[in-house]
Length: 149
Ligand code: RB5
Image (cartoon, rainbow, N blue to C red; front, side):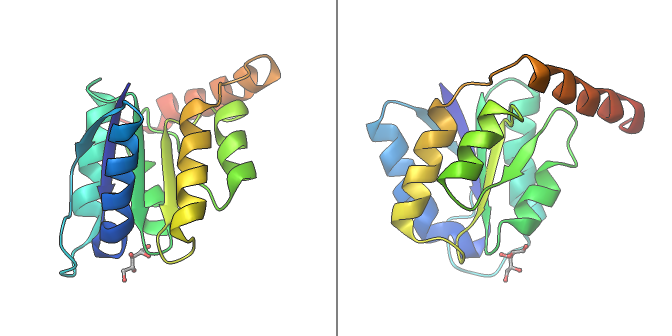
């Protein structure tokens, strides 16, 4: 499974830990930066991960900023990206089970490293449950089709 990961300066430290963790678990990880703590603008990096999913080179994305808010807003501006801002194991599970999210967003300044690893592992292993949720996600896609160029 291919994972695209991108972050601003707030997410550098946890991103490095995550890349190592995911590689150890056998995932192919593409890191779109940023890789230093010099202040950057999150849309410049998050957009690269979103595009990797759009063009099929990544199956899932992980996007990180200080709060996760800017990262999730940015990712959701790309057609076909359904980014979920998750704060705990429950929201990470529901993001997959109910929303079929393909991008996980979280705040590096909100969660500690241990919580992040748990959230990421859950997000990448939980299935979409379909059924009534499929109808709802299809309605989201319908809105997306009508509103994105
Ligand atoms: C950067 O200071 C911070 O604004 C950014 O990481 C993010 O939290 C924005 O949503």
